[in-house]
Image 1 (cartoon, rainbow, N blue to C red):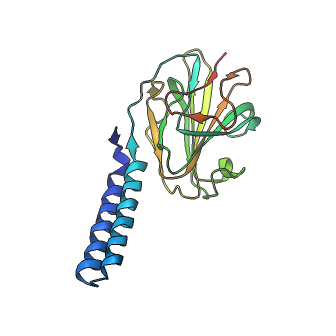
Image 2: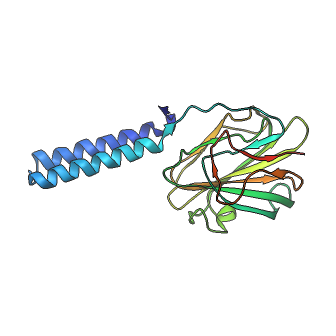
Image 3: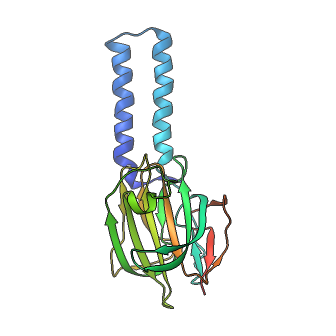
Length: 219
């Protein structure tokens, strides 16, 4: 396991915070020993929390053109039929995965193919499980068209703590199943929109492993 490139600035700032605050406490304020020790422990715990958030685990993707794999680590919180109004403008099966702050926050492409559509939407920062977060929060929409013509749409959705969404795809790009699509900093969710005849392979409350868990089988 390594540290993701998106964490370099945040980890650097966290390290600077630890060094500066502990230096001030020891050499400027000259705080009591008990307080200096408590702050050192608390600040180091904060630093390691930041580091673990940006961890990049090694994942082996079992590529299968019939499978839609989980685009992120997390927990399945929605499986329902909805009307997708941005791109398909019709009914689709939605699977939503909630990512807590302790999850790996890398996002993976759920299928291989060509990016037919991409759009970034600025927006609000409602809690990620709010029903309107998929349409009102900061988010991206990506549609990948598989070689057999089936299209899968997925959204990176910012949460109350997520203030920055990163993506590595663009329209017309050929992407491999399980390749890195982007990153969301801190708590968030990813929504996947599938054809109605896709066979769902997960249940509500299931834990997913990004790039590995099979969400559904395509027709």
